[in-house]
Structures are given as structure tokens and as C-alpha cells.
Amino acid sequence: MHQANVDLREIPIPDFGLPKHKPQVSTAEYESRIEAARRRAKADGLAFLVVYGDREHFANLAFLTGYDPRFEESLLVIPVSGSGEPTLVVGNEGDGYAQLQCPGIRRLLYQGFSLLGQPRDRSPRLDEVFRSCGIAAGSRVGLAGWKYAGTEEAADPAHWLDAPAFIADALRAVAGDAALVTNATGIFMNAVDGLRLTSSAGQLAAFEFGAAHCSQSVRDLIAGLRPGMSELEAVALMHLNGLPLTAHLMFSAGYRARFGLPSPSDRVIERGDPFTVAFGLEGGLTCRAGFVAAGESELPAESREYVEQMVKPYFRAAVAWYEAIGVGVTGGEVCSAVTAALGGLKLTLNPGHYVHLDEWVHTPFFPGSSIPLRSGMMLQSDMIPFWHPQYHTSNIEDTIALADAPLRQQIETAHPGTWRRISARRDFVQQVLGIRLRPEVLPFSNLQCVLQPFALSPGRAMVVL
Image (cartoon, rainbow, N blue to C red; front, side):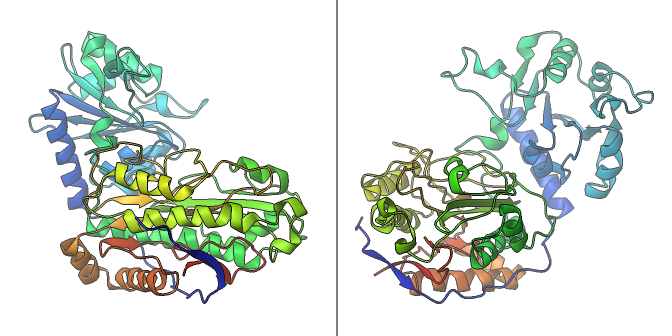
């Protein structure tokens, strides 16, 4: 793959607009997802599939039902064979909220999931809940949480469960043998064929809604960022709209920016400060890093080679990622292209990952990966260079989807507004930024591939010459 010749130029950045209405996933699609999970569980020899969820680890449960717990743990108990219907087990506050989120699904109140001090006088014990759902001595049960282990982490990974101990213990007691309860998270999150790795046209349109809004918020912050603001005042520029987050909002300037993850504080931003920002909504996350300056002349003397030493090699790697990505390409091929373009820079984590209702599902991007990328996948261009004492860091994290010709046609037909934004972003990335995209690469971000090293010159961005 060629090494891109890149430079910092003044460019027009279009207004791609924002969707006003979020496409909704149909009841029929949720039902088909549950049936797909049943088939996977049956192939694994399970009699029951139990899916765990809480406020942070909600994605597998929400994928099946549309229900995302707010304050409490929840479980979806799915009989694998026969005619038994799934049961959503919720606490006091989840009982009402679930009626709104998934009105057609059977609910069962278990008040032990409720917050401390709330009433616990109207529900059975957890072992009795499981028995009422049909689980009995001798039942083989798969418990899906949010992680599964490999042999490098556990001597017996199949039985390393990632849900709270009180749930795991109750299931093991009802099944009568701890060996009968196994980790089933891979059904949803396996890096090769997990059920959440590919999405329908309707789900992709819903994800574009979130990705567009979160990227626009980051774009607005960079456009209005000024010295003299506090970090909290800067975040007010993002016009946050209350959509559900996939990660805590991260923004920091000055010394704390080197750590990447801090929430905003009342610290006053100074000219020449390094900064980082990351914001994620369901369907995408956008992250940027740079300096609160108009150019390198406003940086400390030892940092004035920032563009040459950090930004240019990083942007070349980002270009390599975007030009390598495509249906049928392996994760290892993308990883090799990025590594070759980085020069002397090193990344802290993988060069990207799958994204869904949660910010990180799994990743196909690691050296030697033979995992092929498929139509319907949502991917994050998440490349984080090691922090440098002189040159801070750089970041150009955004979301894309892969869609073959039939899937692109479905999106265009059913969601024309979504398709117009995607098409406009593709034109901009290719014609203005000079990055070559395969037809199946669908940009979801209103800041796609725009790398602005200096927040006080937001019209200056990296381009391929």
C-alpha cells in the first residue's frame, strides 16, 4: 500500500445536517434476534439462555428486547427448546420502564434487583424465579454477561462467569451441578460471528442517528473552544441533548489531557494547552486530540514540530486504515497497513474495533488476524498513539459501517435522509480530504476523517495531496 503524502491545509468543512427522527427497530426484528440466539444456544447444547444486563452492561439485553436497565440488574431467561416464551426479570423501577421499552414481552418482578432499602415484599427468591422459568436440576444453562475469557486468562474459561456472584450461585444451585452453567457471552460478542457484529438496514440507520449527533457535538466544541473558558464551559458548547451515552463524556485540557479519560473540571483552559475530547452515543463515538492554539508558533519551543512528528504520521496511518477497510478484508490486513504507515509511532491498543449499542464489542484488528470483515458491520477507527512528552497525541476516532450493494440499496430506499448524509460525507472524504474509500464504506460521522491539530484554527485540517 502506498504511503500517503499529507499536509495541513485550509479546507471547507460542509454542514452535513442532523437527523431529527431516530429510526426504530421493529418488534419483528427483536423477535428474530431472540430466535437467532435460541438457535445458537441449541447448537451449543443449552436448554436455557440467561442474558444479564445492568446500566453499564446493557447491550446484549437491549439487542434482544430494546430494554436498557437504568438503576438495576436485569435478566432475560430464554427457553431454548419448546414453546416457552422469554421472561424479562426486573426490579421495582425496571418493571414500569420495561412496559415502555418492550411492551410485548413477559415480565417477572424480582425485588432483589431493586436498590437498597426499597420494598422486597412482593417477589420470590431468585432460585424460585429461575424454577418458575423452567430451569431445573440437570438443565444446561448458558449465562451471557459482557465478557468471556480465554485460556490465557482462566484454566477453565467455559465456567468463568461474568455476572454477579449471587446470580451465578443461584443458577448453579438450581441446575444442581456448577458444571452445567457456562459462559454464553460469545453468542453475542464472539469476534468472528457474534450476533451483534452485523446489523440490518434499519439498525444501521438508527446507529447513524447516534453517530451523527455525537460527532456534531465534538465538532461544535472544537469550533467554539477558547482560552479563558473552564472545561465545564467548553462542554456546554456541545449542545448535549440527553441521548443515552455509551461512555462517560471525556474532556480535559492541560496536564490532565495526557490521561485521556478524565471528565471535565472547572479548570480554566490556557492558550497552548493540549486537549482531548471523546463523546459516545448509541451507534458511535467521536474522539479528537490536539492543542488549544492557532498554530505551532503558539506552542512551547520543544513542541513546535508537532505536525511533522506526531500529526502527519498519525494521519497517514488513519488514511491507511480507511483505504484498507472493506468487505472481505481481514482484520490482520488492516492492522498490517496501519502498522506500516505509522513509522515510529506506536499505538496503545488495537487499531479499531466493532461498535454497537456499546462503545467496544470486540475487535478483529490484531496482528495475524484472519477474521474477515462483513457487510453490516459497525467499525470504529480507534487508533490511540502513546502519549509523547513533547507532542502530546493525536486522534481521529469516528464510526463507519460496511454495506454491500444490496444493503446499501435497502438503506437508500427505506432511509433516504440517512443515505443523503452518508453520500455527502463520502464525497467530502474523497474529494476534499483525498482519502479513497471502497463503495461499501459508509461514513457515519459529521467530522469523518477531519483531523484539526489546532482548535483555534478549526478550518485547517489534514489532507492527502
